[in-house]
Length: 175
Image (cartoon, rainbow, N blue to C red; front, side, top):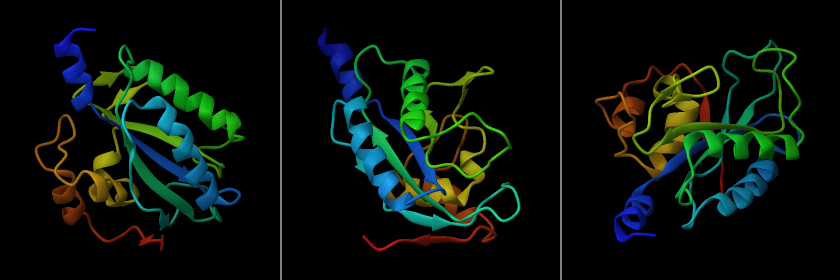
């Protein structure tokens, strides 16, 4: 490993949004974050847990518990390889193939950003195409990376959050 590559990876961060609205959601997210640590070469940066109202979900959907984690990907990790690991982890936690759009699920993991990488493929869009408009992503993300500027955006996460209309109910859960 050359020094330049090691330095680049030490600074590279991938941001993963976690959500759950089926089962003991808070405990599921804590366990998922513990598992995400194995995907990182440095300690995870983890947000608090947030209770959020469902957005664009079927009527009667339960509230979500959401969080965001930042990890330092292993050498050679790509957005696509990390996404595959996230999908496998969702399945380990009981996620089934979708029957309905945004249905209740024990664990939802979304890759929000992977350094400055951009993608627009059927499998992966980076940065996540709706992250900058979603309070349930921006509130926890602003806790751990308020100065982050997502690729394609001109404003920081904190600025984007401050400009959102208060139309999504989010509540930080006690530790």
